[in-house]
Image 1 (cartoon, one colour):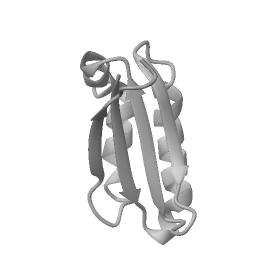
Image 2 (spheres, rainbow, N blue to C red):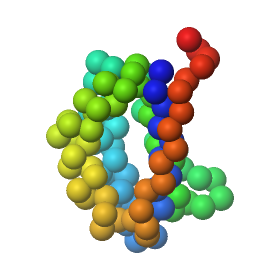
Image 3 (cartoon, rainbow, N blue to C red):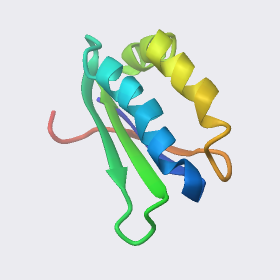
Length: 97
């Protein structure tokens, strides 16, 4: 399992637009054959900070996700909504197997 945790900090007046943009990416991602999870999480303490927890079967599924129209449109629209660049951390899933 290949997991990515992405931190996205959104401009205060752009939160609703961010949720709209990311909803389309989420709905597309969860229907991809190699997707295991695609969670959009909001920080309890900082309401403009979001985390995306993405779990894919393998690196090929991650690469396929990055070629989808919903991903490409999301990334294109995100730039104007964020306070800075996305922060990504990748993991190899150990459990569940």
